[in-house]
Length: 153
Image (tube, rainbow, N blue to C red):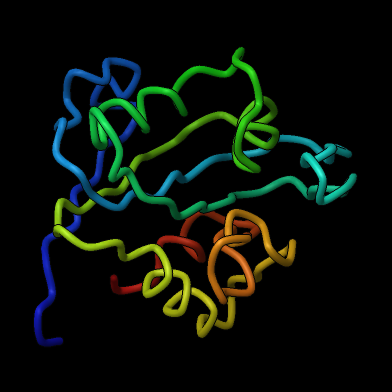
């Protein structure tokens, strides 16, 4: 694939809680999370949704002050004021991995397009994390971890 860049992966096994491993560079990220039991969750103005147990992958970008370190560092915390759709879901999910790229342009929409084409993955909520673009969703679901990690970003 032309222009393809390296995607970095940080797992809990690599002390994910220590955001010192994340660069202050601007970039795009994915949060791979696990929900262990069925849960009804209010997602801001989108409404209340029932989430199935399994793995959820959210794509976002960090082009503000502090870059990836600041934005992903915020997502590492569970108890915070909910500002974005992902904040509501994150309170209930454990963070398994962070994926990121430091390519100097936003890529969450192209990553979402790739995941929209994977048969074993679904986009459970329209407009989740994508209210400022034309994507159906920036949140994806699979009942198993292998299914959601099967894409080739």
